[in-house]
Length: 249
Image (tube, rainbow, N blue to C red; front, side):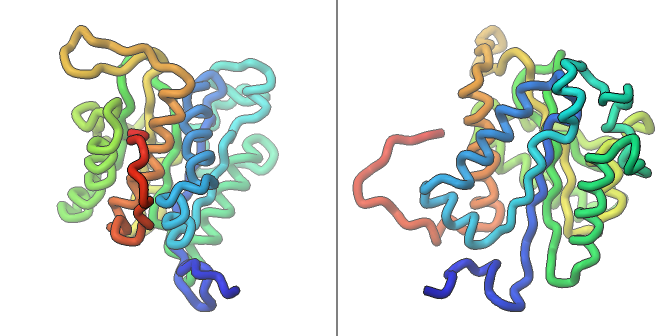
């Protein structure tokens, strides 16, 4: 039968969500968050089905495989912090970045593709919870629109903190994926760094820190994926199961 997927119909504009992780090899939690996103998107969950029908997800789960293999904390095989070389990645010195950046620019230049989100997943060694970094824009309306996704994610994920989410343009971060692509792509694209604590998240009072587990990281990933349903207001398309299912929040 012909595909029901809206995004695969001939001539349809594709809405693309591009997700990358593990550019810093020591930030292992980012891999579990990314795993949660992937597992959810390929599952039989009714929300996942709606997301697959309406969006195209491009995921590069490990931008620094050499560094991970070597057990490096922050650098690649040749000692580069890859997350400072987005502006001009070398095919020889920064091959993974070069490849991903070429793909993103190709999609950006394709009139049939709308690159809507870029999310780069990291882990943070001093902050608690999950939170995001976004960009600063002169245009107030664009700045407000950029806050929508993290606000929705905060409603879906109890361990995600909107109060720790910040928008900045530090010079030291100019070579990161979020900053570079935020400057390159047009105002319908949103670029974020998603950070998650290496150790714990806080629920309720300031003393109630809950240690993160692999499962909790994957759950944050699932909640990131589900948030696209709210963002695009696709909730009405989810087939309601006949029997009540346990909440997986």
